[in-house]
Picture 1 (tube, rainbow, N blue to C red):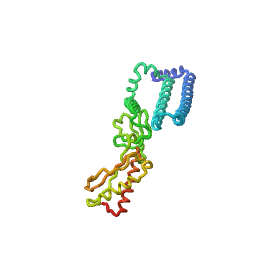
Picture 2 (tube, rainbow, N blue to C red):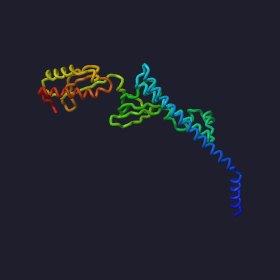
Picture 3 (cartoon, rainbow, N blue to C red):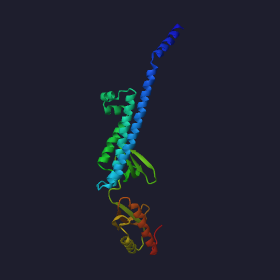
Length: 280
């Protein structure tokens, strides 16, 4: 019983010796510093983004710069990403410093990369390194149609950590840069539009090829963005044994799908109007 009273007395004396006014003043000072710092960084973030947006969306596009719009969009998203991470670093550094954690001593003692690895950021470093080389080698740009593994679509964002690809059905795919090993870019060279028309073995081949040639000669190449006029490649068999005649045209990147639909429709309609029956 006396020991219990002594313990209570000791705790009470400890609380009485604490200068609660100073403690509360220190807490209030730290909170005020953090609030002011957050407000300042938010203001810098707002002003910085407006300046970057003005430079890339108005300034550089208004000049006679040789940089393509796709490349400008890619650099724009990258700089915004870097700007965001720099502000986050300073915000976290200021918070830790304000609450008394010696961040500078930790970094000096362990090293920046050792500290990053200790915090489990190996994946983050890999993302940054791989993303840097992807941009340096100009493998992809915002607006390109690419395929990475099983994912295919249009690039909407290239960042330090991730690359975003929007599929044709609207799905937005977030791919860590460290997972990007093989990139199939479908927006750099002319693309092939391959059309296959099924025909019977006893069909009038000469008549069909003439119909196809006549239509190919009359199309508006510029309107359809065709870079090389359609030409008959020859005959082939499908997996089910159906005989097909193959026609190929080369288009600007992204126009191959529309060209295939338009020309295939014209070919089939003309063959049908000529009274030639095609296999179903």
